[in-house]
Length: 437
Image (tube, rainbow, N blue to C red; front, side, top):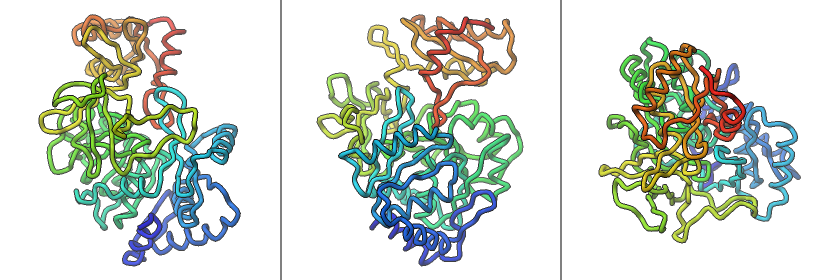
């Protein structure tokens, strides 16, 4: 069954039910299907369909229209410069590996330039329906999506997961209090980038919502605890990549959230931890996370990008992690931004988490600098005394080799289009900015 056929099947039983909403625009399932078919009729002669991340409903309609006509599509995140859009479209048109059923999304760019990731019908269908057996989304649900559909987490885990199970997907722009804003939309659950959980944690009003699902890294424990204990909303995060259609591991809704865990492997996925020799490691041993499954793509669009697969066909993620005795994945961070000392590895994300435990730190971004780390911090109360406290806190919480060599106060953390810390930009900032309080 294709993605369009699945949508049409749902629309056959949910014709008048709400399907999509964004601001003042709303579509029922019947109206969505009609819009897709009308748009598909206008695609004669098209060889590539641009998907506009700044216009969520048009994005979804164009995506399904492209799928109906068998035309490749390309996702453009909001605010993508016109020159970059044109360059990406030219590259896709000239690529030898652009299958007709591909929708091209772009990797987060957290360790270098974004890569073109072609995802097939089978990849996206597997990702959209993977959690159907967990009964997380029902036909009476309204899922508020607080990120662009151009991000694979928002599209596969949000849009497709909702629409292909008969629920409603409502797009909104999170501002002061994402949970209250989602509740005013009548949402039963909300999907947010992890970076925005701090906004939800600042407020104390309880909201009626079954879950907050986040992506783009593990949430800070203090934020997740506040949202669960004060606001009454279970927080569930997971692990995935653009290359795996956003699928990997996920914390289930039917068990308590475990600190530092991304949950067990998602249905249909194999998650393994591999050592430097390429051999699988036992429970608790740290190594590189590898993924296999029907949601994993077949290779990058550009011939210039390295082969991302190992000899067994596992996707080399570049992330350090381990699997615990309960079979749950614990992701430590990117190997490209880690330091080694003897047999010890410490990732930038772990440094951020340790420093972020200080109550005076709102956000942090760490990068290796020589034999130690440099850290950008957003302070809740900027002062020289507070910076000294944070330095002392880091000295207590981190091994000597990982204690920050430079600590710089900044008004905000630079981020990639997917909301993750932009460590390349952070490294440049640390290199040219004097340490200050």
